[in-house]
Image (tube, rainbow, N blue to C red):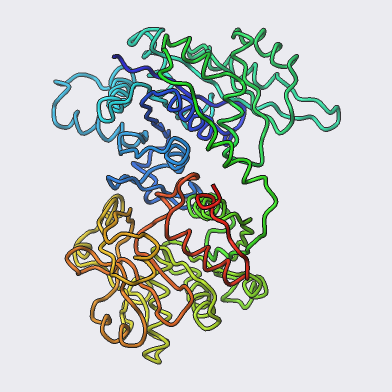
Length: 545
């Protein structure tokens, strides 16, 4: 069977919700029995987002094979419940690097290298690679940015060509646009959408479906107007008002019957009737009034919450499973260093310290770990959060405030966290860390082993520094338990404190594998401890059913 392709473009403004829309439609198609894969085309010239500032890009989402990708791939994996690979994220930098490498190698036999056809051919090759690598029957392809951006033109041209290459019955274009609300007149305006579609059609792409995003309900008359002026079928204009419940989007799209239009248009027969019972219960649980627990996320990029997208969602997944309402408090670690924000921290039932890079705000995170340890507040450290938990405990045990990671102090007398040996000769920053899925052997009787209920797991990593084994004995004698190790016993993957309700850190990123209907065991265990701290009785959904 020839793979079918659905292309997503965005109009009017960025951050309109293309990624969530693509992910939700992918879920609709999976519910009908199709094997689905999703790809993100990012127009920036960076080879990948691995070296980009979280303030500019948000979270870097890591895949099993070690690819550092756009955060939208996190939406894809969480909604569709799939495991994607590096072919699913393409940047302009990757495309041009490949074409220039071939030119230097002489592969073009001295021909002139141009955007058309060499660049567009490489883009099309990478789009085609998804179905080959995954065996997907339907590939959803999202183009980052907004129609009209000069940097996205080669991608759009490649998408235009693919309709001729693959045939109309194998391609479908969905344009996600925004309807601005004019407060003075109290109305939604369709004119920006009309201009956006005109821009898209000037490139040679006529959308088959328009998803009209808005913060307000979209009346039927507006859909009719969009259909008339944008030359699409009335039933192919899908109103999508903003919902406070992210995971309701698939249900709203199901109600709008977009999947029926897509399958009909692509000449597909659904293999089974979609079963939304579990998903509906999930959304109902979000809306149900529940006892609340408060958790502080102590980070250095909290101004842009997208930098911790997967951590936030993983906490929500665990809270839903346990039947509690998560009240997430965002605490800036730099503020803690200035003795500000402590009242906020003292009011929570649990503390999460996520990953990050660079020395700014590090001492604030260490102080948060000390507060959690001394006050017996449940603590979950992720990657850097685990390393700083170790640093804080080492300072306490060694009675030396100079204990540190060599990432922040190269001449520390106690380098309890140090650069991995195989990282010492590496100079390039991009794509050179310990990345991707690695096994972890759990030690019997530990908090981690009880949470996972198994003795071997695989988790996704993204780090250069690791626990220094020279300190394993002394810290172990004082109450730090190394509950997760690499199979050869060389690398500490999980550390926890013995004399504490729950103080655990992971060198890996468990948040990347959490799903709304299958929360990650460590996040669930952490929130159970938080509920105990708050004195709340929990009723997990799997037990309640």
